[in-house]
Length: 152
Image (cartoon, rainbow, N blue to C red):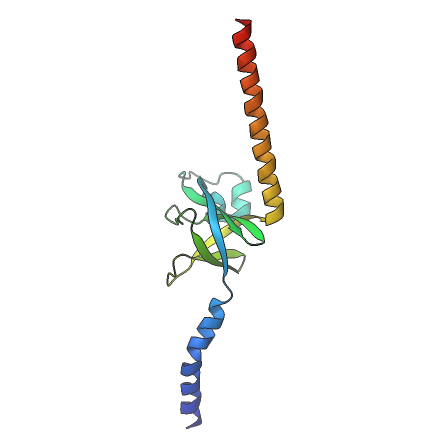
């Protein structure tokens, strides 16, 4: 009888446990994607820097920039078919040195290798610096073009 009551209690509390587990997810937005080498995702550090061990096929994996409230992650998929839509708000959590991502309330998580993490305020400052450098470069190129035209 005690086992039956324990089982009933467990089954009744399971939705609450799942809801509590769902609370561990953070939210973030995917702002950038490009394809990069999969070698680190498949083989790890030692193989990547230990030199070639045999003929390898070139495979590319998606690399995403995921912006959350406090941290910006650069994550790499383990295969070329791990795709996340851009400008999509996704749920994610840290899990065993990886980022477990759930898109659109999917029933399963996709695991991504964390390539880089940065505090969001530092990332925003870096982005502003890059934009300023690009504007300065464009202004310099425009001034050079005008100087060449006036010289001719």
